[in-house]
Length: 105
Length: 421
Image 1 (cartoon, chains in turn green, cyan):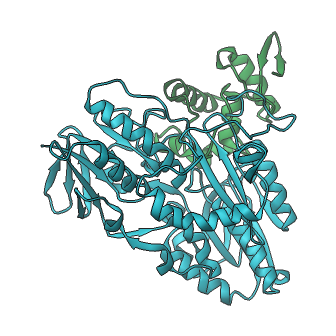
Image 2 (image 1 turned 90 degrees about the vertical axis):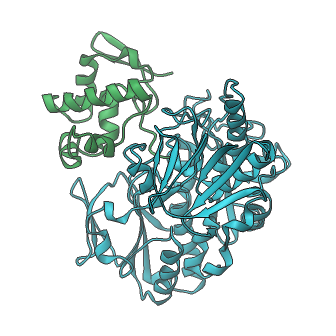
Image 3 (image 1 turned 60 degrees about the vertical axis):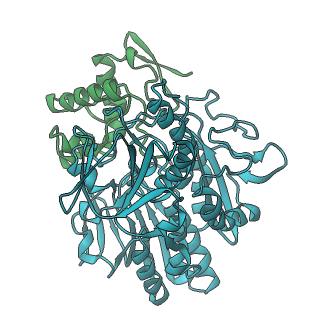
């Protein structure tokens, strides 16, 4: 299992850099992963999304869909793309310390 | 007399009616099956219609024909389930009480979820997930002079996630045979980061797209469609122009689930992934596409779930603990064109891997590799569907739970079951 060093913290990651153990996640890790993903600073709106996703993940064991974020009134899909340019579901999940979203199988 | 109601007489509902009629005593249990019509479509056949291999009439039979004796079949539109009162309410206002309920209402396409999609509907934008859509597309493809043919997956999850890939492979094959391929560009647009969700299969299927000169546009999430300018516009600002758009619109559960207040954001019923019982109601179970369990939405899944669900319904009735036996097993033939098909076999923890199926070494089928015998398997499956699958008979050598025997994990792919999730 590959590992990655973020400042003083070492975390286990999968081949694409997603944390494999959610308990190793810290806010500092989040900030460092965000930088790697091209997000210089995590704003309060970023945190609102991250915290909602983590709450859902703890409750259901699944990364919530973009549709769920939109529908639960956390953030509109358009804003989500502005916050996490490229692939918001994947990027936000990575920063939030969760596994890669399953999408469908 | 107690009553079990099954909502939906598609693949899952029909198998459950057959399995449970055998297991529940007729003296004690009435079984009522409800559907909105009496037309059972063999859904894997939709893919073949746009290319003229099948017509609508080749893949439809009456639902009632596949339900066993001793089961009441009602054709009516259900307004909602009232789980607090244990009753199903019909649109005419009448209600039917149940002791146990099985939700088998499937998934359907919702083009209205994407702004602009309906503007070009069946003019330059087509689906092949409905019998009418597939038939309309057959006429359109025949007359299509050339240009950009874009195959588009709007949002996951979708029914039969390999179907749009098969559509691309078929397009390439049929256009070549008719010497029209040079005039038509094929473009595959997906919200995923590759051809499939799981790495080993994604690589194999992606290579096949490449080989067939199908251009891929990945990580693309459509914000809207401008039908008059004929382009899909992504949330990230990217635009994909098309001359003919073959789309798989957002798939959602039945609107009835939403009216009942029982669905998630996709109108799927939150369901325990291993026991198939509703997460909220002890006497409600679900099967097939209607559930939110994280495996493929496919007939094979409903078939594998059925045996386990029948056991669990009986256990619940008898007050025994449920068996958490469903492993997410899915098995699909993927038509790759030129009279060949790929077979994939996987579950919640093990991604599709190369190998032989159902027996190691001798096969006779190959996993994750195009072969003629897989294609014949797919064609034979229409007969198996009506005569073995729907009556709830076991398919020889293919048990409900996935087997690792015969599968080979390529070097470099995650070695532990579960690490591929």
